[in-house]
Image 1 (cartoon, one colour):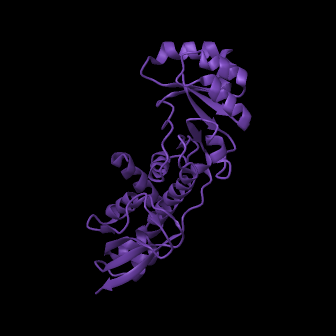
Image 2 (tube, rainbow, N blue to C red; image 1 turned 135 degrees about the vertical axis):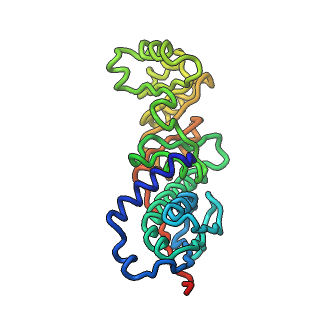
Length: 280
């Protein structure tokens, strides 16, 4: 996780929530009062985001201490204590919602990622995320995928080349698109091309590419596409893959399956922050 990028993300989230001030907390809590709170899991899941929680409270009070009781990527069940936060009561109450928003969403992403990783156990196929992330939160959401046992596809447009159908339509042909890209980016950059049909797979496998994205193909087509690729390039299956279908897709021999819903429509893991004790 890029800590330099994390700081402004957290700062922006706090500014959005606090605005002109936390009127409730400032009206009710004495300055300097100290409190211990605990983060509790209320559902089964995988934890991700505790370093973000720590950054939230540190920005409000540099002396706040987050004592983690579980590790990032660890499975938890209802009632598990994830961490204890110790510091000023005002900072704890003011940062509560922002901290939980980050922790619940990232843990939700890690949880569903682990579910798919578990489904593929024993198969030589890895789970990828996509760029279908919440604007501004890509670094954190892709971090959560890694915490759940998945791996990251490209982080952004400058982290690899993916020639998709619209690129090919604009340029005129797959071959021309690949040749133009290779002449521009050089040998250090990986190039992947999207294929919707077996004919496109045949064409792509003979070009100077590193991988082929097999988009919305039936199982029989995926098996044939893997055979055509013949290990010359890696293969990635994508499109309408669910936890129920993921294993059958992986058994076709593809190297990766990519899932946009890991980040774009995940359900947050239910977590609460409860005051444990107040120092007078």
